[in-house]
Structure formats: structure tokens, C-alpha cells
Length: 225
Image (cartoon, rainbow, N blue to C red; front, side, top):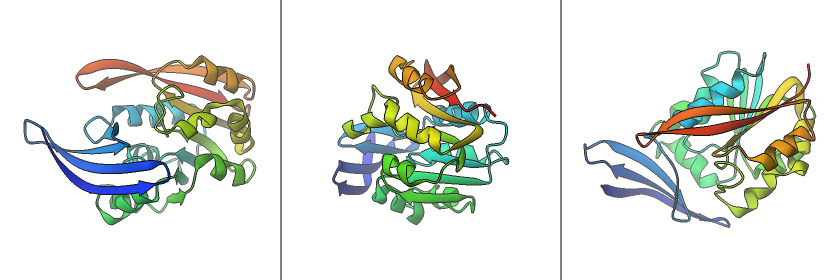
């Protein structure tokens, strides 16, 4: 395979690199890396689709959705494919990544962000949730990592603890939910959700990654109507 670097940025969290990976068959694949570690690419997007669809299916009226983590925009795109969604707020800590999505460095980025239902907030998710109004959202999707045991940044660990879950519960309307994407059935996250929400569910989500079948998990806390 061949790689062409498209963009690079430095922040207090380290190095962010976007590159074009040319596969053996000539296919061009966008790849995002943080501090040298693979985060996501444009070839395998079934997990983002599964996250959005499974979470949206658990809320009767997901008018206002908060997505933690922009990535390459596939989760947001899947959320806005649901016409029940009237507003989608995306919180992304890396300003450079938002810029690459807006200016076309990520080719599909401008079309994803052109949807007038989408609003991007450049902030750390914990701070954004703390500042949000009470009962402002019907659904909160946590998609900043692959769960508490596969962190992009060590500082994200607090996003899976009871204090943050309780803060998130504050901004969710009756009948709404918080959904956490995870590579494993994280018992610690389930415990945190159970201490705060009325109902908790661990939803297995089969996905196809790199020609193999995997099972990811959507950990959902729901507020009673």
C-alpha cells in the first residue's frame, strides 16, 4: 500500500494526521491517525452506521441529537439520514479536524456539514455537556473512542464514569437516551448507566471489519417518558 499525507496538525493532545491510503486494487481510502495510532478510515464505516441506527431506534422522537465526536462525519451522516432528527449538535475537540471537514480536505466533509440541521461545536465533550441546558436533547451519542478500554486519549476516561453519565442524564428529555459505543460489553459503563438511568440495555451490534465479523456493543441508558 502507498500513503500520501493530506493534512497534519498539532494540539495539546498530540498529533493528528489525515492521509490517503492507496490500496492494492487502486482504491483510495481516507485514514485518520492520532499520535500515530489508527483511529478510523473511509473503507470501514459499518460501525458508525450501526451506532446511529441502533441508538435512533430506541427513541420515539429523536428531534434533538447530540453526537460526541465528529471523526470523518459518518456517524453524523447516519444520524441526519433519519428525517425525525430536526437538530444535530456535534461536539469535536480537534479544531483542525473540523476545518478539514469544512474546507474539503475530507472530500465528503462539506456536504455532511452543509445540512442546515447540523451544528458543530469545537470543545471538549465534558465541558460542552456541563454547559448545556437542562433536558435539551432527546439522544446523546458517545462516539469519541471505541469504548472505555480503547481510548483515543487517556483524558477521555472520565467520559465513561458515573459523574459524566449523571451530567449527561441532566440534559436528556423524558423518553430520551444516552448511547455509548464500545468494542466490548463494558461492565463499568453499564454500572454507571444503571446508577443514573431508568432502564439500561447492552445491545450487540454485528459489524463487518477488514473481512471479518465483529460484535461491537451499544450501551444504552433510557429516561422514562
